[in-house]
Structure formats: structure tokens, C-alpha cells
Image 1: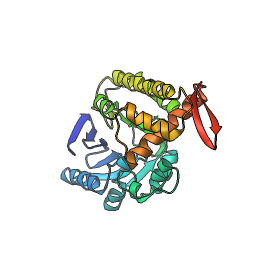
Image 2: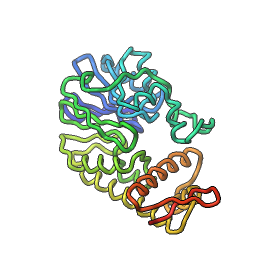
Image 3: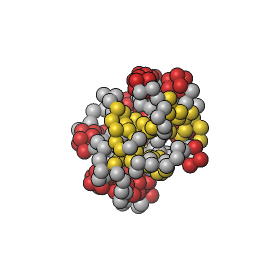
Image 4: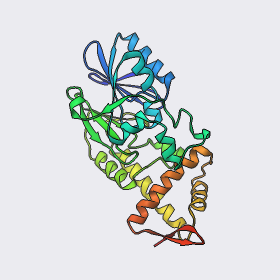
Amino acid sequence: MFELVRVAGNSYYIQSPAKIGLVKLSDSEVCLIDSGNDKDAGRKVRQILDANAWRLTAIYNTHSNADHIGGNQYLQKQTGCRIYASGVEGAFTRYPLLEPSFLYGGFPPKDLKHKFLLAQESGAEALDATVLPEGFQIIPLPGHFFDMVGFRTADDVVYLADCLSGRETLEKYQIGFVYDVAAYIQTLETVEKMEAKMFVPSHAEATENIAPLARLNIDKVNEIAEKITELCAVPICFEQLLQKVFAEYQLTMNFEQYVLIGSTVRSYLSWLKDTNRVSVGFENNMLLWERV
């Protein structure tokens, strides 16, 4: 873990729970794509930088989930690097309490205020083409989170963030976090058609051909949507539906899974309602979901 892997030319990644991109800008300067899940990850990145006599100039965050921005604060304090994030992701990076609050739907209890959902705040500036290194391109990848992006480097290496999961991850966890299902499917369909020298997803192996994995993720989204629709064959409240989803996919509920899977199921329901596959009704002051 935290091994430096060269992909092509000046483009690398650091093997970690969520891959950290590293791109050499010169013999002495580098930038990062994300920073890992916590201060310890930041320390390990710093060790790699020091071992190679590299100076960190910037961190380009793909999105604001804690496992991607957790090393920001430490690295910014240690190196003075600048941090960039796009759109709403910048607000979540500056005010990370927004993540557990958004997931819970209110002020989060202490059970949700841990490093996996609550990063340390860091000073993120607006990400746009004007702040990118030469040869970099921003790739919009919405769906998993609000304004998630990926990057294509001058070496034609594409860093894909969390826009898809590896086969083993899908088989083990079944339901990956999704904020906007319609945007997520559109992103996956776009990625399926992409060409590059190498693709580096955060939670899957680097590959020259991303199309099969993108299709696998699309199929999984459609499977989950169909399953949720089936579970709404008779009017059902959200808590009962969530219980059935956990049972169907043999998942174990705890507070963290409750908010992550719960938020995702709500996103599926919104998409299914907007596409006229389920409807809502109110009975005895309870919102009920029902297949159309």
C-alpha cells in the first residue's frame, strides 16, 4: 500500500484505498490528483515526495468525499500547496461537515462524524481550465457526487475518480453510492466510449480498455433500479423499502451504511419517480412509494 506506480510518461498513481494521482510537472515539481483518506495518508504521500526530492505545488480534487480530500489539510500545511475543487465540491472541501449532514439529512450524530465521512477542512480554490498544468484537461463526471471531475494528462492518462467500481467491489458491496442516477448513467455511457493510453479509476485496477467495466456498472445500476421498482409493487414506506433492499443484497446495516445506502436508494427513487416508474402517495401522514 502507498506504492508509487508509473503509468506513462510523467503520470503516476499512489496505490491506496482510493488511488492518488501524481503527475510530474518538472524534475522537481509535482501535483496530486486527490490526497487520500486522512492525515496518515498525507504523511505517506509526503514521504514519497521527500524520497524523490519533489515539491508539491497543487492538489486537484476530483470531488469532496472524505477519502479523497482527507490528506489535503496536512499536505497544504506541510508544503504550502494550493488546492482546487470544482463547483459544490469546493464548498464541501472548505466545510466538510456538509458531507455527513447531507448524507444524514440533518445535523449528524457523533456516529457519523469520523474520518471516513468527515475530513479536515482545507482551503480549496475554484477549479477551472486556467489553473491546470500544461496538457491537463478537466473531464466532467457528475453522478457519483455533485460536481465530480476527472483529468486527462499530457500523457493521455485519464484519472476517473469514483465514476465506476471494480468487479470485485460490485460483487462484494453490490450498491455503490450514487447522488444523481440519471447523470451517473450518462457519465458511464460517456466513459464507455472513451479512448486513452491508460485509465486510472480510484477504486478499480488501471486499464487500457475501460469499456467492459463501464458496461458492468451500467448493468448494475439498471439491476438495482429494477429491484427497487419490484419492491414497490405494493405501497411501501421508505424505511421498509430500505430494509428489503438490505435483505435482497445481503447487506448488514449500521449507521454508516444506513446513510450511504439510504441516500443512494432515495436517489434511485427520485430518478424512478421522474421517469414515471414509481409514484408517491400519502396515507396516515406517511409517504408511500408504489410501482406505476
